[in-house]
Image 1 (cartoon, rainbow, N blue to C red):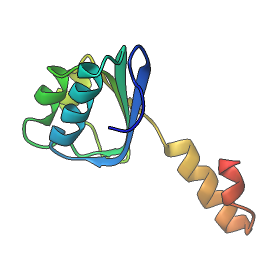
Image 2 (image 1 turned 90 degrees about the horizontal axis):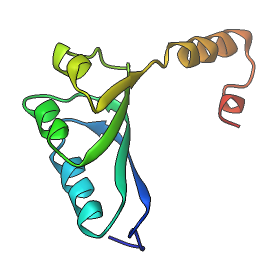
Image 3 (image 1 turned 30 degrees about the vertical axis):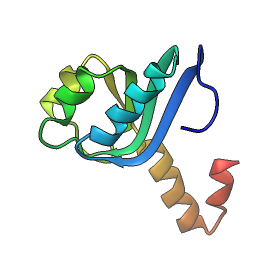
Image 4 (image 1 turned 90 degrees about the vertical axis):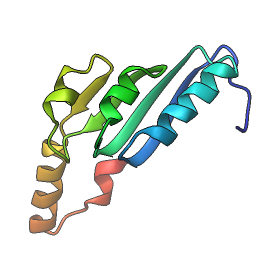
Length: 108
């Protein structure tokens, strides 16, 4: 771990989470070093096998995933996993491509 986390609210960002093992280990390490909280933001939440149970029992305060992958019932019921839609962003990107306008300006 690089940097001082004691007393801070920490954020872990990842592109894809499958089993959740590394992510949970990271959250545990942050808390062990004195972080006040550990939240997670993930683009693609595969969450296979026991991932949801692993995350639910971990120190992850809240994990936010996009709806790029359909949520399972276990994900929908998990108290510390929420899903954010990316449909409007994708629709706007597709419109801009069709109109031959800037897609990169969506992220300014």
